[in-house]
Amino acid sequence: MYLAQHVNLLLFGKGKGQSVKGGDWEMSEEMTDQIYIYNWKNNSKRVELYGRQCRVIARGRANSALVEFENGQREVISRNAIRRVKGK
Image 1 (tube, helix red, strand yellow):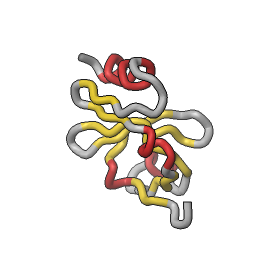
Image 2 (cartoon, one colour):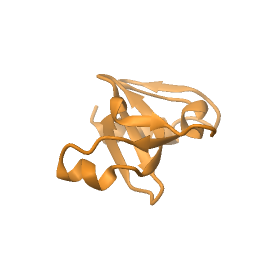
Image 3 (cartoon, helix red, strand yellow):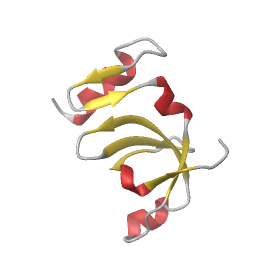
């Protein structure tokens, strides 16, 4: 299955509040409630993302995550690149 098919399964295949696991991706309601800050800036694309708030939509294999930034932009990134916002 391609990434887009997995993400569609995860986002639209189950009701809200349920944990979903499909292929290589996993999503739960608790995951999407936490706010993170993108923290890597070692190339030009990452510099653009640096310091922006995001939320994890789905976790994947190889420590990857599908995140959504505050402007609606979605990216697949390393989970090592994000840090929790304290107090939220």
